[in-house]
Image (cartoon, rainbow, N blue to C red; front, side):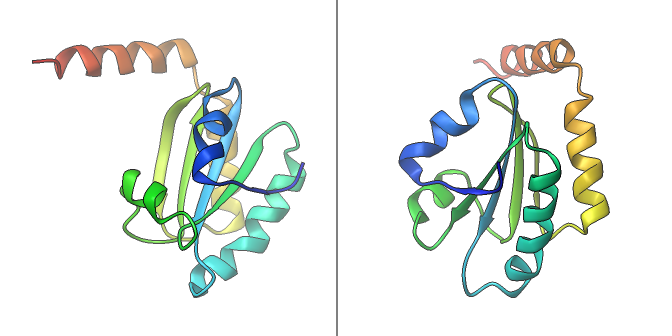
Length: 124
């Protein structure tokens, strides 16, 4: 599956499932977004087991604000519904491929433990 445009209504369902979901936040007027788009598309075609989603920040301003997207392109990676990566800026193809490999290689039991510890330490 290549890239898929999603809306605010589809966002939660798209990221919350099992497996890996990458989300590219972009806008039509953004030059770096346009340069990143073909790279994102190529990497998506090479990794059909991963969901590669795109969110148009102009059309989905409320979602972008909710997620505190302050610069575009911003790339987020979710695995099993947990945000494991978020970075503004267009990535070169090699860096995007390394990110995909890194997310695939995560020990999700360890990630869940760290999330639980973080949440426990921030409860008042």
